[in-house]
Length: 104
Length: 207
Image (cartoon, rainbow over all chains, first blue to last red; front, side):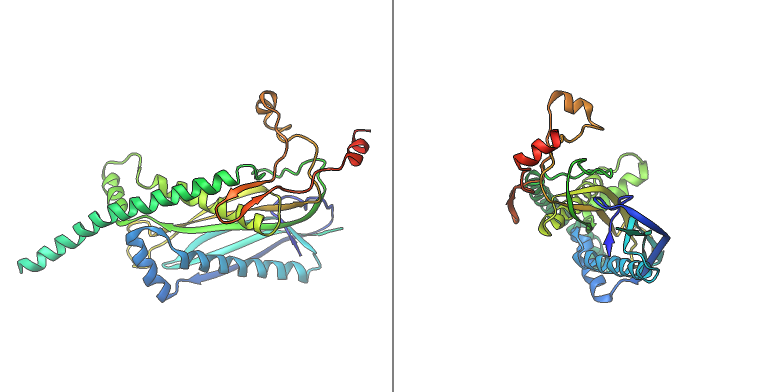
């Protein structure tokens, strides 16, 4: 599966469009990580636990999107965008969307 | 109890003094590291529009990302809190956002570089606020910055000059050819980009 956030795949041509595919996941923070993050919040600096958590979650959203694309017969997803929104206290939704296409 | 009141007053004060020093030290060190890494990757083609060198041979593409969750220290949050009373420029938060964005961009570039790509096009930046879990909504707990783009692996170096379409001013004063190199990166070393185009194909192209 080819993934790209440009309108087409560089070096290839699109031969078929399958419409928009989406994938999302809602994640809450882990207690252990939250304690560490609370401590880090005083000192300042990177919250490594959260960086990992969000990257994992975003990967999950991407995988769901790609599975959807695969199930409808696409071999690439182009013009991918990411958004993050905080849905509840301590929980965030990670959302990925793009256009499923077939390239030669 | 007077001793209890003393603790309640002393602890925040102690935290303020301590985080004033540690926060500044962490920030300075981060900026120094960032500068070194950025200098190393200055000639690694990264653009935020869907640009592919017109005569490049693209061997592979993939989505690359870089992200960072970062928070501000106790002292700076206190300063920002004071600033909120009067309004105006929140100077203590500006370096935080600056270094978070630069860090995310650098991670994206390093990821692309590590996986053998030569350039990243159509870069986008995303900012999200990670709320505090303690119910009350005071104080930005942390922010996440995500940088993502399409990484390109080129079969060989293109011949055309970069910035022919958008940066005519730069082009007129100092012609720039494409460059895809990393120089003296503190962890990743140096890399010279895709192989140069052979003279035989050069003759073919000009003909």
